[in-house]
Image (cartoon, rainbow, N blue to C red; front, side, top):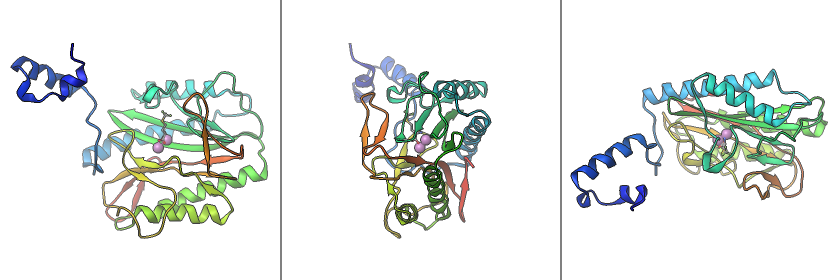
Length: 284
Ligand code: MF3
Ligand code: CO
Ligand code: CO
């Protein structure tokens, strides 16, 4: 028995009429093929992505009112999952390449992709990143914020603030004619200027029609280099900034990425649209 994937990869000339019909049906139901190039979005796609990004923004706002010391990351997962479904949307992380939960929760030395857990209780002094991605009417909206749990150390607060400034400075570069290198440089120069390092192992990405589309958006680089930005690109910028080394180590769960030296890491993320003369922060 041919696996469906092999079946679809066969040449149409080898198919019977009936097989062709079946293949067409499967293709209509399957997710759109993974793109090889940047997808410039149509006005209709932009409207859909904007709505999805709005939901992601609203979910993060909801969390701002609830996250506190004593809450478990599992509780955050439940809140995100339920609010997403209540809006007729789907949480993109759930079952994405086997990810087991509906949101990523990354605490202190965790760089990204932390897995919510019933046993992880938020404690005074923790810094937490919550990364929400919604799929609404088939369109993706991806954003993350940092949460300070109670009183945190001045060192932790500073890292979170500077990382946020890195994202803001990067967004300020976004307009037609700027390059991806301009974005990376804005982040790297600000972070390293404060003695921090920029994580290399994870990057921003095109998004909107798929979770992760071209191009890769590096958070370091040289001005004037790399792909030029054009109107109707939609992509994330999501710098991960470390107090110590930028090197990462993956835990045995295959997802949780931590700093090798155990020092703090912070991240902020927005999904952006390049407009004809600048940028729209879709998750803003
Ligand atoms: N939201 C993450 C990003 O910014 C991706 C998470 S993948 C998951 O690209 F599987 F961990 F959810
Ligand atoms: Co992202
Ligand atoms: Co994200």
